[in-house]
Image (tube, rainbow, N blue to C red; front, top):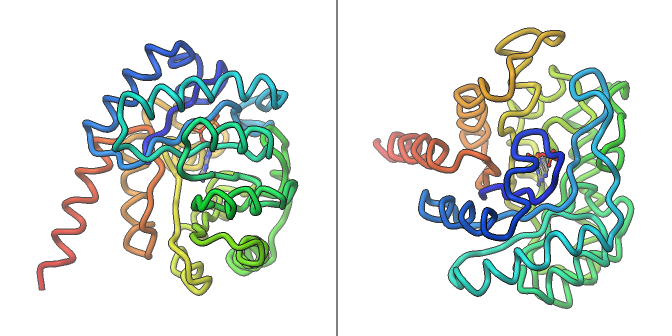
Length: 271
Ligand code: HH2
């Protein structure tokens, strides 16, 4: 899954793809590099806190719709074979994105704020990604202390899965929400135990791409390596996630990720 943020303030690609032409060129490049899904986002979920300062600005649903709908329509027209997901937790945006041709819904709040999104996904026959996060995009819940992060995230995702299944969603994907309201240690624990989410019986997606926990490991938590120095670390984390059972990977760097996973898959098949 290649990331296409059409926002001014996403932590890595903010401001780069706000114009339709630039967004389409980016989608084309990621498809050529091997992306199967383009994830279009119109609101950054950058958390507030020590790492990113003030969190992402909240975006009204109208504005978010104005950002993502033309891009989804244009990708559908230009690259009809591509799968498109919409990264939003707002039902108004989900509805508009599905009408514009989006195939999947990526809810980074895991139905916590808008469980009605599940009914929209069910009605459209669209797969629904439920990611674990405690707050809304832009919130700062980093001070939450987990007694057992793996068990708590799995339990919260089990509840989201139950809501989705009860609404009739045919395909659910779970996501531990790397970097969302978790310490560096929490994030690493979750990554190392991605297999625990397989008990929920749906495919697992992981998005570690250039996130601050990768920077913290490469530098220190107080002085993380900058985002432009986190590619190789992200690939290492991605390989672990896939070895532990993740089957979808959300990334800014499609070619390096595809190459990393090709070698990983070939190696695992050599018995
Ligand atoms: N991470 C981000 C956004 N959406 N969706 C899923 N399913 N999983 C993730 O880990 C995930 C996500 C944050 O990354 P990014 O989109 O690059 O940044 P921003 O939120 O600043 O736009």
